[in-house]
Image 1 (cartoon, rainbow, N blue to C red):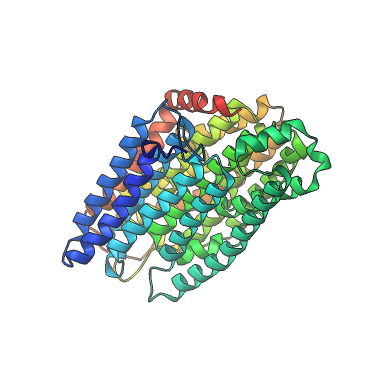
Image 2 (image 1 turned 90 degrees about the horizontal axis):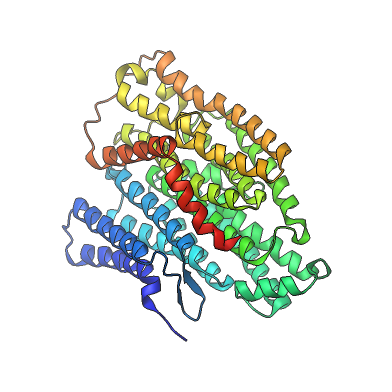
Length: 479
């Protein structure tokens, strides 16, 4: 059996970065948080370099259980972007008062290792190991604000529900193994192509349980219960990281499993995901309408976006799969950017997370208000942002697949979402407030994160063709 460590070099680089950060903080107790950030970002850059070095290599490791193909490498870059932007957000004034930076940077790196394992795996058990590495890291990160009751409550809720979701996934994997005698995705695909899966209820049940386990990570209905409380209770940089990276990893694993093992017609799973997509969109958007807390609103918004992304999976074509990848990249920029504005504005004493807090922001801090408006427009799917292009590609793929009713429902939901996204813009630019915003100064790391997120949101919206062509090429082998 060949280990081929080069195939997992991005994962090794990231894991070593986490250990290095922890080791340096133990040996040099006075090491600055800026130095730890630089080391962490260099580790992320090294992981990205190794990922790009493996491009078109299609390398295998550990007897084929891990596959470093272009599909996994693109997602590696998405994960690394999300991790880097989130690490920089941790330099806000509010987080500076309590955050253990060495632990935060190291555990974020370990969580990203879990994401990379999930997307690179061609074996169901390795997917489970990656998911558990990610989950345990996130449980710790959510509760890292140890003096805050809401943070501890959020971590406890996330841990309990996450444990149940992991159990569902593990049971699903066990049922698949009981039916096929293998955990390898290619051998599962061979079994499915050679038998009538409709006569194998154990296989159907296993597939449904796997969808439940991964559905928890992407916060799709009805496995979303954890998202609002966890998003609100977790520190803002961690919420930003979790809302993007965890979702991307879950959908990447879902794409890998579904597109590697079935032809889109087995047991009518497309119909199941069609229904889940519609319920997820409507639930997320309708409940978001009444939220006055920005973090809870973005949590329900995240649920709705999971429904949009499912449209690309239901389409079951090259355009659908590539649009999912493009949308997840776009979502990483615009969602981290929205949370980044909260981090930028927050002071040591207070986080500005209520809708009322944003009243009159456009008159006192017009630049940051405009940046927030860009992210709200993108999340709502308005041109010329990445969110608009992402939804356009998703809906176009569904139209090509003949899913016209689903597209109509998706457009209706996009129109619903405009109301609560624009309510933030209205509060900033069309309402006055007696509140005097404290001076935040130029927080270099947070400002850089916001600048990169804004550039990504507008850049993908104005110049999408190059990226969508790359993403179409990488999914060809999976369809």
